[in-house]
Length: 434
Image 1 (cartoon, one colour):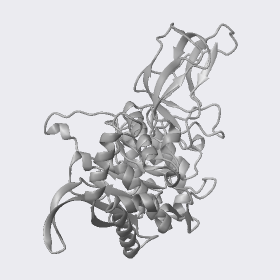
Image 2 (cartoon, one colour):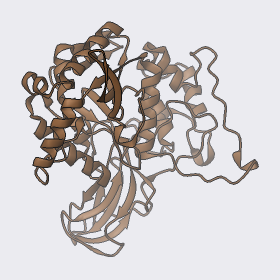
Image 3 (cartoon, rainbow, N blue to C red):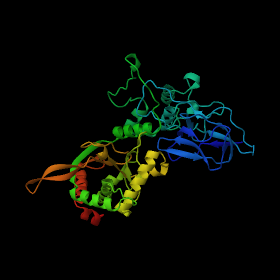
Image 4 (cartoon, rainbow, N blue to C red):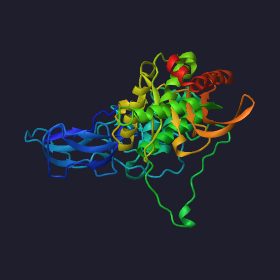
């Protein structure tokens, strides 16, 4: 028997939700054949079987949570060395908590190495994350919850005794501690439990997990930590749109043939970032330094139906518009099919969200933390504008740059967007200068 444990799925990923088993219990499976689909808070992936043989037991059914390092499946490979587990290794499902906070998330972890071997730590992923942030060994926390479950109150009570190994990083940043410790630092912030809505009419519930939960955690982190400022302007893309349509028709069916406006905007943004490095940076609040990135990886927000994901187009300063257009098509398709890999979502330096195809005149996007700026594209429409004292019809693209006011000012944003508009207004300039 071979015990197959859930492998490391990427930095910062500690658990996955089982979506579908590709082999039934007792069924034959080939080595490297598809075994199970697992969704993390970053992407859905298909995990292949490391051995061939018969699927003897599994850790859980679709919808169950499995922790990295826990037994995912037992395969009878005919070797017969390792004993099969008799109980599922899936993590306990999260139960509704009385007062959800911004830190409540599914970023769980395996049992701490120093936990006593005689007691299995039972805690939902949100509590495991809280304990990690506060540098507390869950194995040392006396549980008071049902079935020996460690509760939020248990962790906070243990923290108050001063017995944790070292101060949490959150203590260096009050807003982080308030999110993790029940909003006891932000004045007048009081998060109350939700009422029982069923007393007024029918309700329906679904688990808040995986990608949707990851998006929520990222957005709360960004809005709590980052002082957002938005700069808005319009780009006259009449000439660029005419050029784009001609090239799209000429290249129909070829690589990158869809040639959307987004590809041109990515190129213009990249040029802008080289001239304004503050928007291609990250702020480290703990060490009080600004990290300027000398590479340009542009994230593209994609609506998947399960939640928003941001695959990354890498090295956009070294790629042509046609190459960028091809990659946009590829990553968008993978995102909607749920086949993105973790590596596809990492390493971004700046994000663009394009709601134009869905309509809307403008938007104020939320920064994709730890980045410091994001560009929102509205819907390009024909509008009457004044040019040379005359009213003419032009194609206007609304743009909004949301940025971190800690590292840049309004004047910096105005110069950045103005330069973008200058390039987008003339395709010859865009192609020449990028």
